[in-house]
Image 1: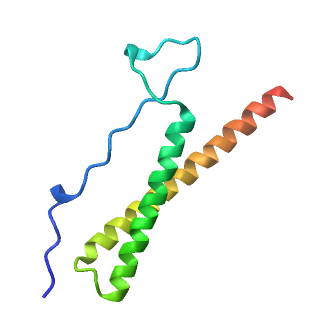
Image 2 (image 1 turned 90 degrees about the vertical axis):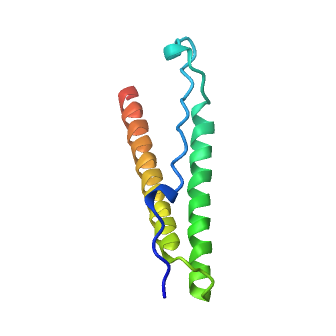
Image 3 (image 1 turned 180 degrees about the vertical axis):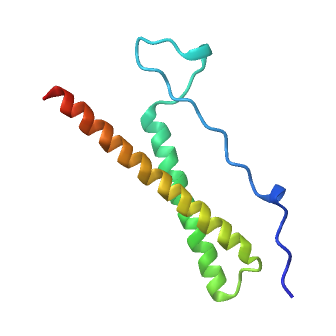
Length: 106
């Protein structure tokens, strides 16, 4: 017999986003402080790597018969896939923005 799927409330919420520090010489909106862009990007890439590692770990557990709830694998795999797609989209947008800026200098 299989175990029922856990309630949606049992899924961990996505962590709160952090604000990005304003450029030098500009005032922060509402006096909020944040982290620089490189730090935020690094944390985001670490999260993507962690999600992929978690999905791979659960896939190994499923293949060896140690995973009791297959929904965990589905959720982790989908989360890793969506995070990878987001990172790829951000990379594509950054390259496009860079090429646009470089085109303005010509």
